[in-house]
Image (cartoon, rainbow, N blue to C red):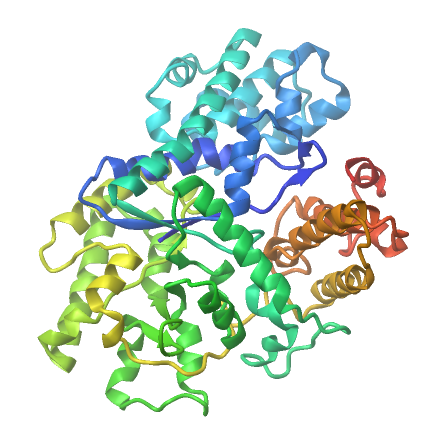
Amino acid sequence: MWHQHQPDYRAGERMALPWVRLHATKDYLEMAQHLERHPKMRATINLVPILIKQIEAYQDGIEDDLLHIEKKETNSLTQKEKNHILGECFHANYTRVISRSARYTELYQKKNRGEEFSTDELRDLMIHYGLAWTGEFIREEEPFKSLLAKDRDFSEKDKAEFLLAQERVIDRILPLHISLFEKGQIEVSTTPYYHPILPLICDTDSAMEAVPNVRLPQKRFSNRDDAYEQVRRGKEVFEERFGSSPKGIWPSEGSISDEALHVLADENISWTASDEAVLGNSLRHPKSEQDDKKYQEFEKFFPRKFLSGANGIVVFFRDHILSDMIGFEYSTWDAHDAATNFLEHCKTIRASLIERFGEASLHTACISVILDGENCWESYPENGKYFLNEFYTALTTTAEIEPVTFSQALSEIGKENIRPLSHVVAGSWVYGNFKIWIGEPEKNRAWDLLVEAREALHRYDPETAETQEHYDAAHTSLLKAEGSDWFWWYDDDNASAQKQVFDELFRLHILEMYIHLRLPVPRELLQPVGKYESLSDGGSMHKAA
């Protein structure tokens, strides 16, 4: 499964950050194109609903802050706009991307020396940044091919043609996914709408299951109704684009709990997935059935069924090592050697299963490989083009291995042949717990702001059609603030030059809720949650809201 995701960057009529557009032109189309070029390959692509909505927003003409500047004549830019370009347009891997161009390398070195940029240099920089975030197959098409060959001294006409070509790339993404889905080559799964950590939305106390001594926020967030709403809205987006209900849901960050699984099962989801660490925690828990010890090393290769009867939901558990090999290790390997190594691991697993359980075990065993489909490729030579070609070729030409979608695996195994799992210890695919999203001071403060907003919404009683409209808009703003990414960037767990933007977007979504309800805005929403200066001292937040 390739998981494709970006949070909601929309602030009013503008995108605060350009990552949907940049990953769209570099990854979202190309990942589907790789599969199209290997018609025997089967895979699942997870498209987060809010990502789909933002791709469509670009098709409808929305601009991110950088794109708004790029569309202007370069010689008319203000100093603030020039600074924005210089701050944004070097967010690319130097070794794999920037150094491919002599001109981009010159500009990178000039920036490091702290020198002034001319109008021509700024124009070249904007185009090179866009080219850095352009997929390898698209680079072979015009105007990208000619611009790459030209390398420098771009004109305003070049820039306009490039930006128009970017729009056309974005237009191709969803139609190609729909086509591959309808052919049966790929399965498309979905996620709760705004990518929340579903177990924490159900109950923040679930964080204690994997880490009993975690320091929780002052106020407990527990709203199962919002969990259902996030899932239902996600399903609706899928149904409108793909013409059927999704069979599977990748829960945001692989996060599951008993309560979250009940929500998914109630919504008629057939399968979901998490990490092997969650399974390990669950099987060590006193509530779980104690299987024969011979299974323990191999449990992740056998999906489990949570709940019995018609509403039972099957949970797959990813092979953490194999997934991370693609995500973090193989980028430094020769492409053929990496694909061969992956296949050798699979064959070793297969041989071990036969040795331990007999040939019949292969009918119920599968290896689940799940990782982000957009984030690792800039570390690979040429956006992973060589690796993915070798990888898919190997998987489709090796007799012992059959690539399948998750629904295919479930169908071939048969639900009746899947062993039960009566309890899961709540956790995610990051360390098997939720420490990335809760438990540190800034993260907990953000949760407290969310709880206070939820309480204000709960107290609001719509009495007319107009006030119901206000309530619905406020509820949507709150659902946006429940997204996982805002909490991910608080405290020092993860590094990003754009942490302030994430903080401001989180507070903006909550602030919008109060404005929709015509309630006073709490003063703390105008101050950063983290230890940094507010980008706008609340000004742009008021304007966007």
